[in-house]
Amino acid sequence: MRAQTVDDQVVAFPLASNTQLLWYRKSVARRAGLELSRPLTWRELIAAAESARTTVQVQAAQYEGYTVWLNSLIEGAGGDILEPDSRPGRAMAQVVHGLATSSAGDPDLDSTTELETHERFFAGDAGFMVNWPYILHGPWRDDAAWDQDGLGWDRYPRSVSGRPARPPLADVGLAVADVSEHRRLAMKAARCLSTREHQIDFMLSYGWPSGLASVYDDPRIREAYPMADLLRTSLQSGAPRPETSNYWEVSSALQGVLWPPDQVDPQSTPREAQRAVDAALGVVIG
Image (cartoon, rainbow, N blue to C red; front, top):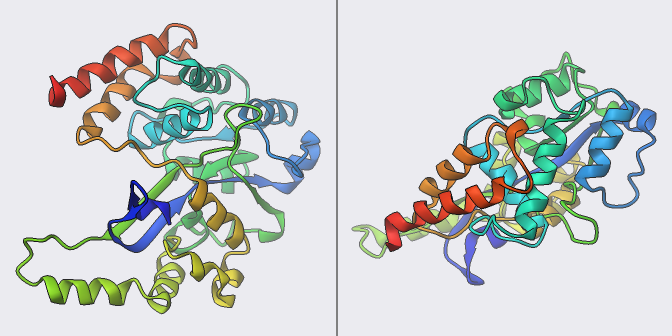
């Protein structure tokens, strides 16, 4: 899948990939009159949550998960997180501002991580959530709150109407350095761990989706993950973080300017973010 590629060239053996879906409570979606037979935009999702008097849970604390959300929003609008002072950058800011200043935003939106959003959603305090599929398995799962019949899932929301969503994309790949003293053995181990059977075992045991597309056709995976086809599609259309050697400086710069969410101004904040990104990149290229 694309998480293991650079310029369409495979650079690592797939061990695990990850993407986010929109999770929702079916009863809340019905109450909001939400139409799920077509792709939703963030604006429509926020309006539906307001109508149902519930919240949309996102990861918006000042940490890497927030940058992941920002990246998907601007990519979904047709842009690049390295160029926030743009029409897609303003579309990104509009979604952030729109959720943060609406009743659909969590009162503690600026401190929510994957854990908090997971807990509030499964406790029944929220009707909608974007999160990774490992919430379904392992230590994340809370059988006392688990009700699969009441749980729904759908494609990640669109940033703007008319453009496909670019859900978050993460990856763990196995690469072997040319300078490795045991290159042959390392390559053999990487090939073994990335075989279809090992990928199936890894996904069932750890809750991380596989980076191997054929895994999603296996009956065991399809039983454990009824949304297997959607996961595969989302992984293939996801938005990776930008390819820059100074990514962590860029991420920190964006978090510094675009946080807290309720202070984001769709008109002025993208310009401030651009200056911060340019300064972060200047550490390398200046």
